[in-house]
Amino acid sequence: MRAAPGTLATARLVLRTPRPGDADAIFASYASDPEATRYMGWPRHAAVTASHAYVALALAEWDTHGCGTYLIERDGQLIGSTGLHLLGPVGAATGYILTPAAWGHGYATEACRAMLALGRDLGVPRIEATCHTAHRASARVLEKAGLVREGVRRADTVFPQLGAQLQDVLVYAWSG
Ligand SMILES: CC(C)(COP(=O)(O)OP(=O)(O)OC[C@H]1O[C@@H](n2cnc3c(N)ncnc32)[C@H](O)[C@@H]1OP(=O)(O)O)[C@@H](O)C(=O)NCCC(=O)NCCS
Image (cartoon, rainbow, N blue to C red; front, side, top):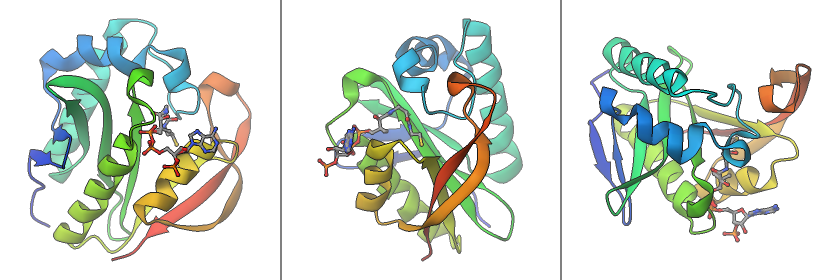
C-alpha cells in the first residue's frame, strides 16, 4: 500500500503528521485534560514526558506503516488528533479526540470523514471504530460520518480513567 499524505485539508481543518516539537501542545490541548480523556483507551498524560513518548510512538507507526496519527489544526491551533491505524489485511481503525473548547462544531465528524476518504483512497477494505456504550456523542459522530453500528462487544476494553475493569463497547465499521 502506498504511503498516506503527510497533510490533508478539509473544509475547516488541517490534518498533519506529528512532529517531535508537538508534545507540549498535545499535552496542554487534550492529553492531560480529564474531560477529554475520560473515554479514551489510554491513561491521561500526567506529565509532558508521556506526550513525548506518545509522539515517538506515533512517528514509529508512520515509519512502519506509512500511515497513522494525524494532529488536527484549526486556524493554526492544535485542537486534537485523529488517525488511520492499519491493522494488516483486515483493515484499519480510526478514532479522535478534541480539546473541550473545540467540541460542538462538527470538527470530529469532519476529521472522521477525512479518515474514511483516506482509507478509500488507499484501498483499505474496512475501517473500524469503537466507543464506550455510554459515549453518546462519539456514537453520534461515527453515525454522522457514515460508519454503521454492528453491535456491542462485551467486556472488551479497559478505559483507564473509568477504572481497571473491562467495559462494553459499541462497534462501528465502514467498508468502501
Ligand atoms: C466525542 C467528541 C470527539 C465529539 O466531537 P465534536 O466535534 O463535538 O463532535 P461533532 O460536533 O462532530 O458531533 C457531535 C454530535 O454528538 C451530539 N452529542 C453531543 N453530546 C451528546 C450527548 N451527551 N448525547 C447525545 N448526543 C450528543 C451532538 O449534538 C452532535 O450531533 P448532531 O450534529 O446531530 O447535533 C469530543 O467530544 C471529544 O473529543 N471528546 C473527548 C475524546 C473522546 O471521547 N473521543 C472519542 C473516544 S471513542
